[in-house]
Image (cartoon, rainbow, N blue to C red):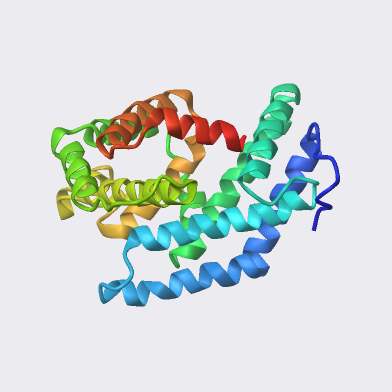
Length: 268
């Protein structure tokens, strides 16, 4: 555990970034992270009986990923919280800007593969890694076309209306404390996630967006799509598509975008 009184790092060497990714893989493959992901995968049995929704398990997966990342960056001198992750990410981006293209690609691939490992373990789809190696990566053109379709669906009037309706009907009277505001914001984000899964990606069964894009039906198709898109998660055009559409969803959910931006800046 890092000394709370120790100064935080001012920069990150590319080698340290690669080491952090290796440590992440170690904990995901063999440590507490793996055990937690196995527990999430075991929830699939309950999910088949309608007790554990996909969004709940996805949130647990993300939480496990963040917990593991916090543990790793603490060993590098960062605080084990969102502020520490924000500073580590900032330093990693600065390191990427100054290192060679070969090292940049090594860091990108390491991050991609770690995320894919988390996905495959959390949703008990171990064959995804071998399947991807045999089929190859999704092309950037295909990835952009898919995410363009996703962004258009995210902004469909019926999707925005559903988010707005659920958030307004589920609204409860809460005080203005920071804790209450965080709880309310988390609830609204969960609504967005649920509508994204149900109405953007999976609506329509055999004619759903994931099925149309060739990834099969249901939550396995959704996970397979996210697995493939990991190769292009840093693409600026895809980020633009998703960012523009997400702004519309946040507005529909009644989330104060200015307040959200201040919160993010305060954690960075």
